[in-house]
Length: 329
Image (cartoon, rainbow, N blue to C red; front, top):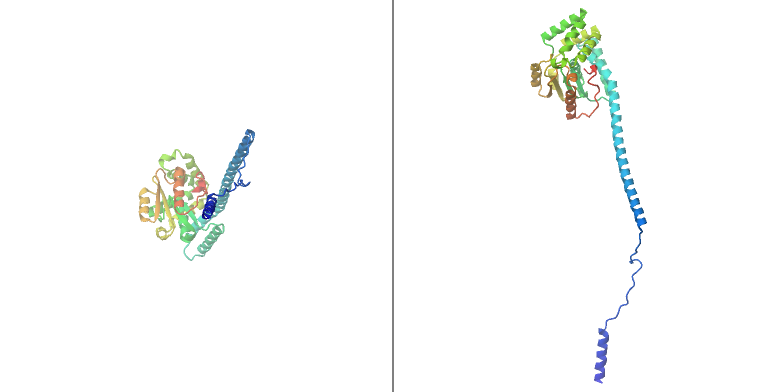
């Protein structure tokens, strides 16, 4: 009987040692790979479609870039046109303002005429502000420098920078006063053309006179066409103008002197003394110019002025006048 029991146990042990065979699972439809057969014609069409998409994308990007450039260009042109229109509007006012400033200097303090003209100057300043000219770089050439200094003294808050182009803050010396009185006598004696023929060539460096003889002729014609009383008033205004050196020292705006190495009206010695006396001001030299640097060296003059404006926060702008325009003085 024990043998039977042992045999049964052995049989059970053998049965438990036999692993159960797991049924093989069929791949589900989700995991089965799908295969396609692509013909050569279909492949060529897909390549064509891919190229069309790529070309369309490139075209879109180019159009987007061109539109962005167009938008920036038109905005810049619009700003430039607005600036030019503003300059054309302001320019005539400045000429009148210059003459008013000179006229103010003809009267003593407290004189009713002076008070009236000062009131008009203030009104002109208000007009400039209304036109949007709240702060500006002001450049004055020769006698225009005196007007620019007078404006700076009264309206420094409107200045972003002051440029004296072939001009000084000095009052007339006794010799200069005597020279101007002789010029007034020539005008009163109806010899304005003689004065013009002497003055115009002296404004240019000798090496430039032949090249710029047409400009010299224009200056002579301009002087001859100017009203006698107007010239006399300008000469008297220069004789009686105050020394403005202290005003420049106190002026809290960037300043620039532009001198010509061959200037017949402002000697190199005078210019160098001014440069030494005004360390607050920048100084630039036109090496081949007399008193008319904007005609004698127009590119260098523009480069100097643009550089000064750029260093002191001014925006790039279209020049308000062309160097060929005699009114640029």
